[in-house]
Length: 174
Image (cartoon, rainbow, N blue to C red; front, side, top):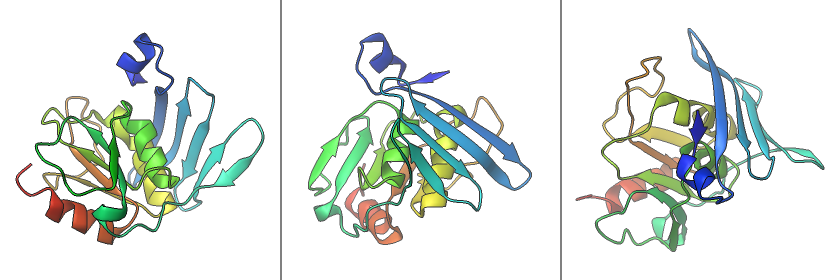
């Protein structure tokens, strides 16, 4: 399925196709393609995460941001209050936004929607973050790896564990 289908239907150039193969240990290999510009993010467990553009292939790494006050945070949904971030963005594709965390384009991703995301929306981006060194959790501390197509998860991702902890403190009440 398309992740960012509203963006796609409105010709907003931020939507993707995300694939992730699982084995008994979790995500094994993933590909997330920004269908609007052709960027391809790929990862293989234990071998890092990469961005392929028409001109080059590069290893991706997250930013080193540790404080919410210094961060650009991508959100899904409308937070009930200002978390004290430097700036925030609502981008519209969980898979691509997780890749952007992994690549250091945004510092964190915060989902405030109670409906959550389906596994096909985030598993590819999860492997990108894991391989790049970023941190991803579910708001309710549920396991992220699932083959249950009815399952939904409320994601929180950050470039660093310190930033995730600070973001969690800042979001109390949301």
